[in-house]
Length: 302
Image 1 (tube, one colour):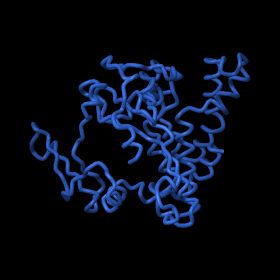
Image 2 (cartoon, rainbow, N blue to C red):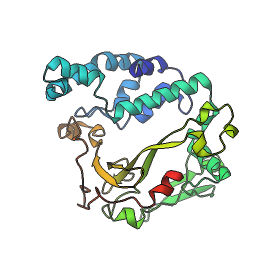
Image 3 (cartoon, rainbow, N blue to C red):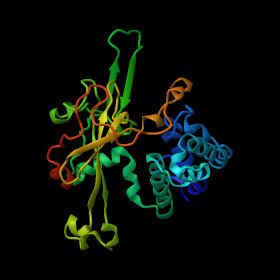
Image 4 (cartoon, rainbow, N blue to C red):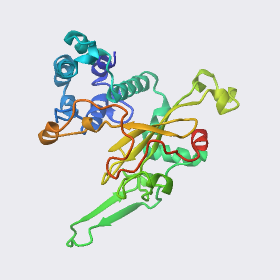
C-alpha cells in the first residue's frame, strides 16, 4: 500500500514542496539502499524511473538481501525473499509510510495544521502559545565572512525567514553537561526524540477535553540520538532506546548504512544493521547504555 501510494501521489500537490515528487527528491538525496551508493533521489526525477525502481530494482534488492541473510525466511530462499520484500521493515519503510500518509491526508483534507511544517511558522506559533522552542534571532539578516578572504569573496548573507527570507537564524546550542559526558568533545547537539499519540482529534471541539490527559495524549517511546564526532547534526548518530518512565538508556543501533553515497563508501557499507547491540559511544568509548536521562518526567510532561 505504501509503495503504491507513493506512485499514485507522484505528481500531486504537496503541502511544503509544490509536488510530492519534489518532496521525495529533496528528502531522498542523501539516502541510498545499503551497499549501492546511489542516492534514491535519482529515481524520483520522473515517473518511469520511479516505476522501474518500484517494480524491478526494489524486488532485486530484496532478493540480494535474501541471499545474504537466508535465515530471515526460516532457511529457504523463497521465504527469505518474501520476508525481505514484504515484512522485514526497517526505519526507512516506517519513515516513508509516515511521509506518504501525511501527504495523502494533507491533500485529501487541506488541513491547515500542515502549515506548521514550515519551521518559521512553527516557531511563531510556539511563541504565541508560550511553548518552549529553540531560540531564534530577530535580526533581518546576518552576514558571515571568512576571516582570511577579501575582495567580496568568502562572504555569505542569510535573510531571516521572520522577515521574508528563507533561513531560520539561531544561536548554536551546546549539549548539557549530563549529555556531553556521553559524547566525544566535537559531537553535534544531540537530541532526545519522543513519539507521541493523541486521541484529541476524536473530540468535536478541543474544549471538550479539559486536560491533556483527558485528551488522550500519550508518550509512546523515546530515543536518544548520540551524535558522531565531527558531524554537523545528530542525523549522524547512534540511536539509543530510552525508557519513557525512568529515563534509563538502553542499547543502541545505527542506520548509518542507509546514508553511504558513492562507490567508495558503498564497497565498505554493510547491508544490515546489527540491531540494538551498542552500549558505548563508538567515537570515544563513553558508556551510554545504563546511564539515565535526567528529569524524564518533566520531558514527557512537556
